[in-house]
Length: 121
Image (cartoon, rainbow, N blue to C red; front, side, top):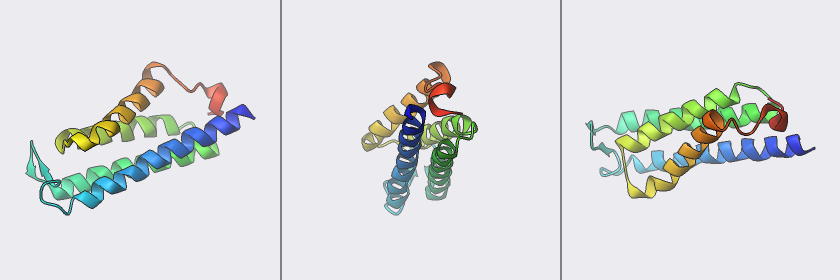
């Protein structure tokens, strides 16, 4: 029973974190949010990166629900894309997103948590 519960929790958290990227994409309409310190006016780039991160987190969450092992690389890739997006369009309101993305990468790559025996994939 515990692996099923943990799989639901991990999957739901990944999906919720992905959906949080919708808030970022809503902000691209404002001039300030769509300006990158590195590439200047880049609302299309920001929208594409956020959408890809959102899709990656949503797909990884769904993959956890159904027990597909592909969820780990999807979640790590989505977290890395999200970190790139945040770095390009930094706003201090995104600090929590940085912490969550780093926690995902550390947990899945370095700590290798949760183990396959805990989530079934």
